[in-house]
Image 1: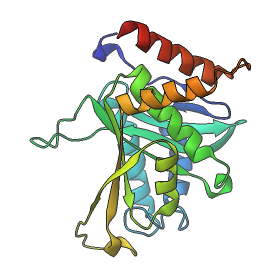
Image 2 (image 1 turned 60 degrees about the horizontal axis):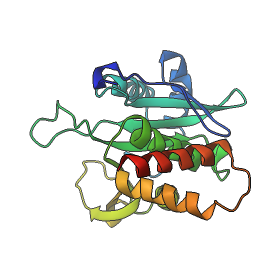
Image 3 (image 1 turned 135 degrees about the vertical axis):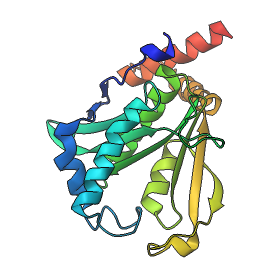
Image 4 (image 1 turned 90 degrees about the vertical axis):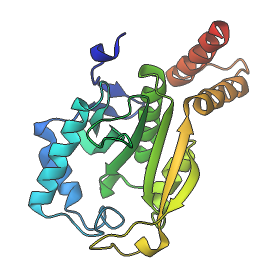
Amino acid sequence: MAATEKVQPTLRTARLELVPLGPEHREHTMKLDMDPKVMKHVAFGRPFTEDEAIQVHTWLMGCANSVPGFGTWAGYTQGEFVGWWILGPIPTKDDPEKFLTDRTEYGFRVSPKFWGQGFAKEGAREMIRHAFVDLGLVEVIGETMTVNTASRAVMASCGLKHVETFFNTYPTPPPGIEEGEVRYSLSREEWFATQEAGASRGSDGKSWSPIMALSKLYCYLRKILR
């Protein structure tokens, strides 16, 4: 499929339906951005104002226009909004108005009601699968504050590895930023190798879940096409 034909699809996991973010989801994204608990380690380290939250929602929707197939997804479980997940564009070094088309930065926000239930990881893993399998990207990265242990744990559980700690200067620095920010990365080859290893461990004659069956199919196809 040509890149120009790729559109942002609805994605599904065991518990989540991930639909392309639209204007109808603005109330949900604004509620997250204006929640002190959610924003403790994000951006300014404080809740966004209403105007800021509206701007963020507009930007999230605009990601779908930057690179074909990229975008933001609103996640629902049994009809209830859980949060959003994103495959965002990465600007080129030469021109911030142009974007890399072979790699993406993923991120998410989840409502506190669903914290500690594995939804952040479940949605993130589907973003990564979509990036590598459906879009054919070569790398997924993630960034957060060093002190954001919850976000770092999600990245690590999805296979991303810590590759860099960096320090930026902000006019209104959030609490904890003095410890820096971290960048995590996962390559397409690393992800497929992990899927192959998992498929091998699961070849014990037991029945497979749909996700495991798809993973084994991906691994088989990669082997015969090498």
